[in-house]
Length: 304
Image 1 (cartoon, helix red, strand yellow):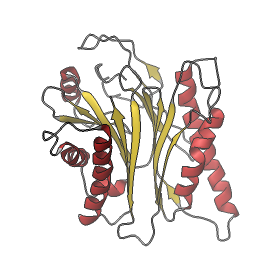
Image 2: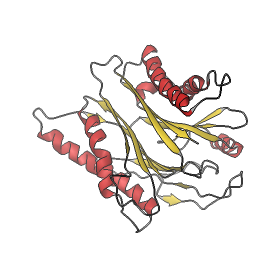
Image 3: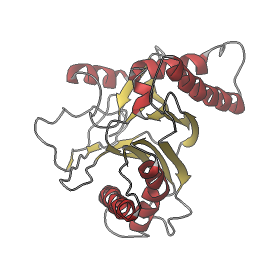
Image 4: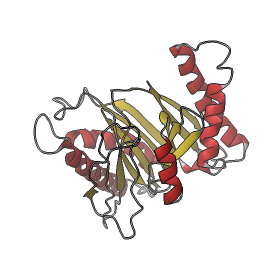
């Protein structure tokens, strides 16, 4: 999906892989939009969506904050890495592969840590190299296959332990292929995308996982036609969303990043510090509000 294009209607039946025809967005920039949701009845189910951010290769910078909350241990895990060097030769016509993920462990930390160390490695093994068939279809299939393989490997390892591991984990992953975002989700962790309207400077929050977006279809269309600009992508476990709504979390970050912006022209380093600080402040505030669960926040800064 191109952020400057219209959004598709929500599916009325269980969705199957599909491609929607290209459309001319309101700002006149020609681009296509695609959406795919896939589910499997095996032990590992997954859904993933592709989001095309905008034209031109954008710079990404991740900021992470973790808090134990009231739990005895931190059961969450996360991964941020550049897969471009590990995946050589790169898939056809791609120059960047970046990976971001948050895992919300439950019943222990083994599953979350295992997924954080192995899911992206399994993904790299399956990604196509060099020229070949459709990269878009291949990446979607590789994500599902990597989830299944990681699940199977963990179950095998868990069963071999004495006593056997009984814990599990959610997963919310973003794979950035150039400017295309592939989102793979298991469980109740979320990925959100924040857009800023250039004229009003008001934020619009889109859900990148599970539900295609968080509002009614007519309102989604109105917001999409109004145009906008990306700021960042927020990934977090449900510990954050027990204390914040998606809109509250985004507005909390924006209020910190944008404060005192009128005093002087911000340097790139200063903005980096603002995002880093906002990430930690959000985690602290979630704990202060009484989030009893672990809190992990991964803020991916998109630099124009």
